[in-house]
Image 1 (cartoon, rainbow, N blue to C red):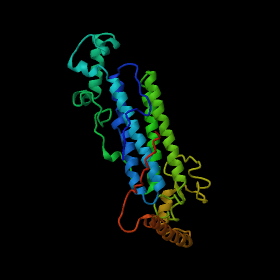
Image 2 (cartoon, helix red, strand yellow):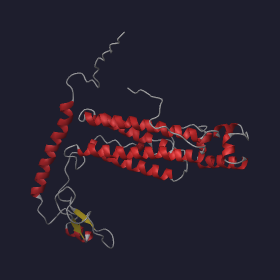
Image 3 (tube, rainbow, N blue to C red):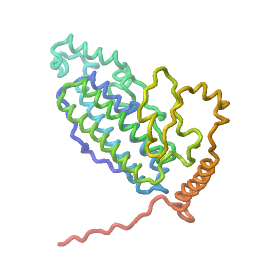
Length: 318
């Protein structure tokens, strides 16, 4: 159950109208890395987490709800940045605030022209209203959402989503000198960092979270790193110990030769029979564990999503 509180989580303010920046800010309203996409992503991910991970369900719902709050902040800021512009489109009065801010009729017409040419749909179709479209007028799309039904995969997707959103806010801050907007964008950007760390902590709290999914990696092909470009550069991604695996990288200097000699990797010189048996055993164990997580948490009989507890009425002293 949602309850809307009309006070914003952060008090959004603007110094002056700026339709050009309002159009740019639409990227964080209806864009691929915007607040609506984040809210819907975490909201949909939460359903699959409810039974096996009720604590993660609570976290995802909380963050999704906060993202809706951020969407409201972005929408409110966009609307304030358009102050006076909608009226100008209907009545070209020379005494309007937007004309005075832009120092004359020519400047006023120029800024409206720039807003129109950047995204004609913004003011022509929506009338300057805030709708789920990006800065180019492209409607928000559900394909922006990454929800895979495996919580460890979803949490890794969320780390990337928060990283991209933070970067967009950093770029947006370069295109405005309004100190109030900088405050708002700084708040929103910083909350992306907070969410990143929440998702990171949630992922680390899940035992056996690597590799993603259920099945273990095939030990015959896990360690190889292929030199597929001229001038090999060595680093911790292709030499030394694999992070968290306890095995060494195997750098294949001549991958074409290796493929030919092994008949397309189907006839490897090493004996992996013991590793393959261990991997198959792990697959069976993890399959049982993952399946039990869901089955053991499912209630018997009639399924019920919520339990309702009576709320006691406080005693009023007279």
